[in-house]
Amino acid sequence: MTYAIKTGVEDTRARTFVFAAQKTMYGGKRIAEGDVVFLFASENEGGQGLIARGLVTSSEATPRHPDLERQTPRVSVSVRRTALATKRLGRNELKRFRDWKDGRPETELNFKFYRQATNKIVDISDATAAFLEGFFQHL
Image (cartoon, rainbow, N blue to C red; front, side, top):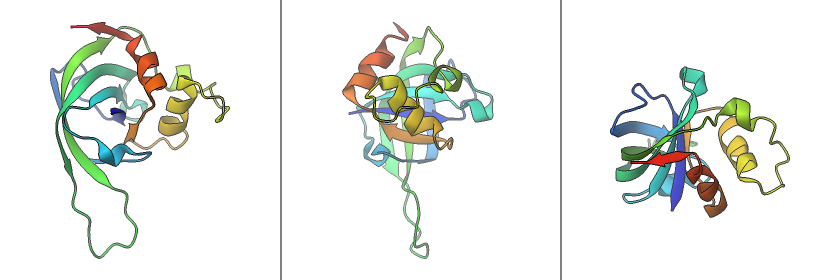
């Protein structure tokens, strides 16, 4: 499976990333070791959007709180970077893709990441993964 994560990233050129207790939506809770993940540095936290592609080296679900009725599943993941983005792709480039039913990769990313702008891990389609591959220089 292929996923994308949008979150705060301190060192955008790090070789490994660790993201603790990340919110998941749109199938993101199924992320597992060996999955491919595209990393977006959250613009809400000073980031620039798409920065890297990597491979999940570990994934662990955050335990649920039994006293809470509703809670978003959260996952902690470690990612080894496999490629750096060579072209820009973020909120500004995606905001014009708003026809939620057009099937475009740009629209899928805009819907999942920016319609509700919280940081999160999401599952992405094969077409969107193929689209994102065009933004990378492989190491």
